[in-house]
Length: 200
Image (tube, one colour):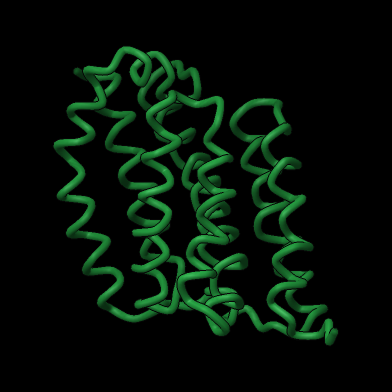
């Protein structure tokens, strides 16, 4: 089997990075560092060694339709976020960090943004785009199943929600040819929910 530029080989090389991130700890800033290391730096290096360019892993500006859909979905999920604040399990879990004031809150939301960027770069970037060149729906499911499993341990509703979201994110990103639309949707939705949890 040809190893160079083989998306299946790259996929299985990258899968063990998921538990490496899952079981890292040490606070929000250290977790952001581990996410950048295992979900961005190492996949880019592995992809480079195997002959994949950054753009082939989704690191590009992308096309406008993906961003348009991300904005529409962000607006559409506002009612879901409002409902989520009524679920005690969600309110008790979010935000995922402690903060001493609004300045500290803002800085830590930036760290969450780094984490979200890394997640989208990995699941909707490195795991999705190379495989999608061979089989689009296989690629969507291949990135989505481990993405949903990565949410085990969070509030129970997040596992099925993340499975559905992972499919939607992947479809948006494939249309855009970039993971940036799903990153913006994911992060801004997370910030909104955190703000709602602490203000309502």
